[in-house]
Amino acid sequence: MAIVIKFKHLGFSRAKYHEVIKQLENAGQGNPVGRFYHVCYGNDNEVDILDVWDNREDFNAFGETLIPILNAMDVQLGEPDIQEIFGVIIG
Image 1 (tube, rainbow, N blue to C red):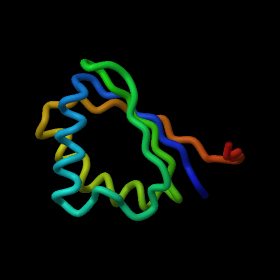
Image 2: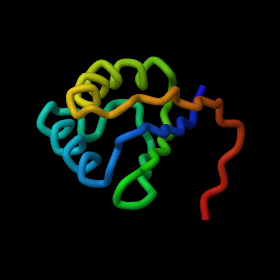
Image 3: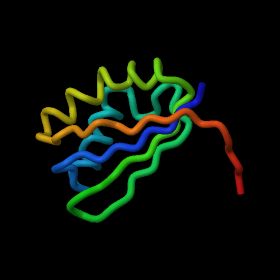
């Protein structure tokens, strides 16, 4: 079942976001299996993330790489809001 995940972490600035993306790409996880869509939004000091994943298992596998990177950057992880997707309209 496809899921949408919204993240809100404390101490996650735009600069840290770009560094996380760089480190994920270096780890071979810039385009992880199972992720359909990724959006980052907010301001320079605080960004939020919205992802669409094929399933929770692929998201959890990605977290094995992502979470240590975020922890090393002193990002205070918030609890993700994870919901099943039941409808999609494109355009």
